[in-house]
Image 1 (tube, one colour):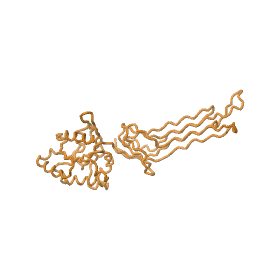
Image 2 (tube, helix red, strand yellow):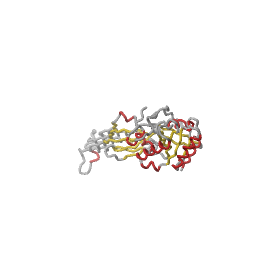
Image 3 (tube, one colour):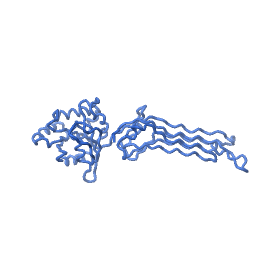
Image 4 (cartoon, one colour):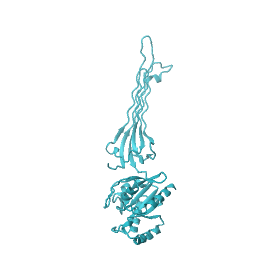
Length: 331
């Protein structure tokens, strides 16, 4: 299934039904008086957050959504039927904007959270409501309230506790598959990951956290180069960054320069990323000797950030890494 993280749709609530002008007409009941019923209320358009969805694919092709109108009032004081509410189910993490004003209407962060996007029109009153001492036989009724139309923009930002960042082929997908039940595509070439992947990592003591794998970043990403910038919004909510730096011998740049390059792109996208808790992971450590690894670790110590040396293939260092992440998230 294609990953879709943004969509613009048009919604319209239901119009209210008009009130009825009617009079009681029964044998042996002279001057029966007005008995026109009220019109029914139009349906609202609601948004509901659900874990069952992970993309906005349902809104890629269907762009128009309308709630039912309310029914018209009838004689014998019968009210028109109420229009049913239209509920749009959206993935957790969806932001809803007014497409014309860019006003944020809602941020769906809780399961089953419901927000109203467009109110249905109220039902018009029938002529019974206008009866008075000076007007015993009113022949007036109200029209139903008008429907509300609006264009809204949906933007999905994955809700993850931990975000994986790094250059293409840094080992992000391999790490995610090693410590969670996620099954991202893994191959030995750049840009294997074309869309974000989300996995749940289980820790001892019934603790768990979600981890998002973002497509690899390259130099100039904040200007639109490569794929990663398109999906960086999905780590804006994360509490911890895992910055993966490959120790593979065939990398074009030395590890520390690649680390600096990615941080430059992250900060150019969002300056608040500088203040985010960042853990450095030196990956593919099984491809170097211990002496070579120690030399790189010494270089990264000057960042004053926590540094882990791991291998997702041999699983070296993963246990200590997960324990540390669990401690950081508790803070």
